Structures are given as structure tokens and as C-alpha cells.
Image (tube, rainbow, N blue to C red):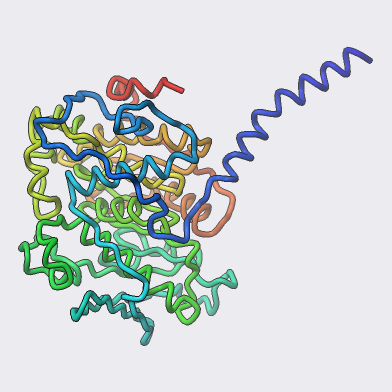
Length: 415
């Protein structure tokens, strides 16, 4: 009897970590109601480039910027986010303007969302066409249709049927209503509202635009029949970067799918600098970033106080799927592979590594998702937009299995 009792106790104890881990994961929010829940962080010292320390490895996302140590406690993550956002805005993209709810007015006309944003006497109007799933008269949930904001098209460059057959609406973001692909500083639509921010990069401006579309949806959600708790964003190439920045800087987005974003997206600037003819700090488009970032080109990249594994980790604890295409050298998916692993450490530390996936597949054109990746995209749609059970533990990058990503992030082994 004693032997049986001991076996039962041992079996119960073995189960405890699994139960505990599941319980912890359940407490990590899948989405937030606020654009940015990071507290009004105490301003951190934003030094000139030559005053910044040289860091050849990727910065530890859990380390406090003032050097006082590190914290992997989930309750401290929003403070970490606040520090990373300060660095990102100061050194890379410029300030993403804050907007009060009272300054946004929205209405719906013939399945098109109209959003008017006011700053003083100036008004900027954004429009976004809403595409509802064909042949489905009403949403599967009483709260409305889950939806994805697609850059340029309702579902970005991903196959429409993957969303439509699942009952997911698509909302097309016309980014040029905020800023053109290649801005002329001071002449863009957003500059009418913020003439003092003419230095800003497009990824700050475009992220601002996506957030204003969400503001508008909040005002017309019932009429538009959109479920605001299940919003996604997606885009490909330069728009894949746009989707990544939008998801990183707006916590109302539950799922981000960054398709072939390349340099300036998930890729780490430090790693890309070692990879040859790829998008790096010195040759990226400076219509997209602030001019001041150019000083970190070449060997000075090691003085950049952040890198894009931290940008990527800003999405945690929400869901992210990164799609790659190794056939295009410029995209430098090896850098993305290293950076993704460094970012994944944040989700893993919080017990939710199944909320971040990576799928790299060649043999197809740029921004043309092959059928071999359909299941990966479908799994993330099912789980994070539809609340269905799906296996989202996705890491498919066989061509980079021998890459030592840990050499770039020795802190991965710290607890």
C-alpha cells in the first residue's frame, strides 16, 4: 500500500509543472484594450552615438537600460517595452504621435470605414474598405467578424481564401493616405497634422495610421460587425516590416503575420552587417527611417542600443508568425532566423513559446505564399483569430539548422 501511495504522489508531483505552466500561460493576455499599456516610463538617457557603449552581441531584452540588472518577471515586461519603445523612436523611426480618443471621429458608409483625425484646425481623413467573407450572412461569433488589416489589400499578399473560408473579414489599409512609399519629408499627408515631426520615418507614420484605423473601428464596431478582440495585421516585403511595426506598437492587435519582411524588419542589424549584399543600416531606405539612424552604418552598428529582436519581442505576449523566403539574398533570412530565436526567448520565458512561429520556405516568388506554408498560416488564424485549437509550435527553417544563433545572444542561457 505504501509503495502504491508513493507512486501516486510521485506521479502527481510530475504533473505539477505541466499544470502550473499551462496555468501561467492562461494568464498571459492574448490581446489588450489599449494601444500601448506600457506605463509612462521614466525617460532613459538617450546618448549621442559616440557616447554609447559598443555591444557586438544582441542586447538582452530583459536587461534594464540603466545597467541595474535584469528581470524576467512578467509584471516587469511592460516597463521593458516602455524602454525599448523609447530607444526605437529616438534612434530609428521617430516619435509615433499620441492621439486622444476625442480627436478621432469615424463613420461607416457602404462597407467603407472613414476616419477623421484632428490636430488643431487640421483634419486628415483615412478610408479603409472592409471585405466581408462571401457567402456567410452573419459572423460566427456574436461579437462580430474577426478581421485582419491587410496592407494595400484586405488580406495583404496572403491567399484570400485562407481567411475568407474561415469567416475572417479583411480591412485594406491605404498607407499612402498617411505617407507615400518613398516620402518627401515635410510634404506628406501626416505632416499637415504634425509639422514638427517632418524628420519621422515612414514606419512610425504608417504604424500611426494602422492605429487610427483601429480607433475608427472601435467607434463603429457594432455597425461594422467587427470583433475588436480578434484583430490581425499582415503585409509583405516593405509592408511586412510595416505589419511588424504596427503589431509591435499597438497592443490591440492580437495576431501579426509578417511576410518576407527582410532587413529592417525581424532581421537583426548586427547580424545582417556580417552577411554581405543584404539590407543593412547603411543601405536601407531612409524614407522609412529617420536620417539619424544612418550614423550606425558599418562597424558603428554595434553602438546601436537596441536591435530588431527587441522590436519583434514588443509583440509578446500576443501572437506573431514570421514567413521567410531564402531564395532572395536581399531578405537575408539567416539574420531573421537568428533574431527570431533571440526574440522567441521572451515568449519562452513567459511560458508561451507557442505564440510565436517562424516558417521559411523557398521555391516560390517574392510575396507568393506556397501551398507548403498554407497550414502554418491557417494554424495561426485558427488559434488567434478564431479561438480554435491548433498546433502553433511552428519552426520550419531547415536550411539554417546549423546556424549558431546562440553566439549572438549568450544571455539565452540565463534564467
